Image (cartoon, rainbow, N blue to C red):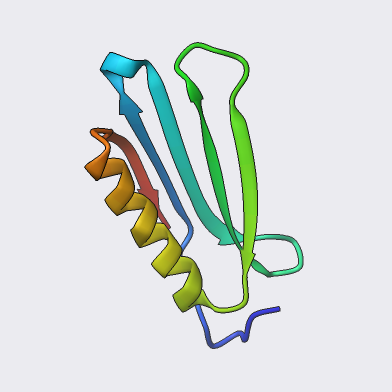
Length: 87
């Protein structure tokens, strides 16, 4: 469980690669136990068989570093950010 003094922003990002008809999403937040969780979702646009992975982190800095790596990789692989929500 994270320390109350450490705040993790709630983030939802979605990228799409139109020519490949693929999408990728990243959700950063906390679960019911207040653990920091990064959820990664990907698949084909309009398809029903996507994938989802939840990864828990011990510290906000680790989770934010993992999110930054995802952002860098999506841009490097030609995905376009189509939705960004931060709370």
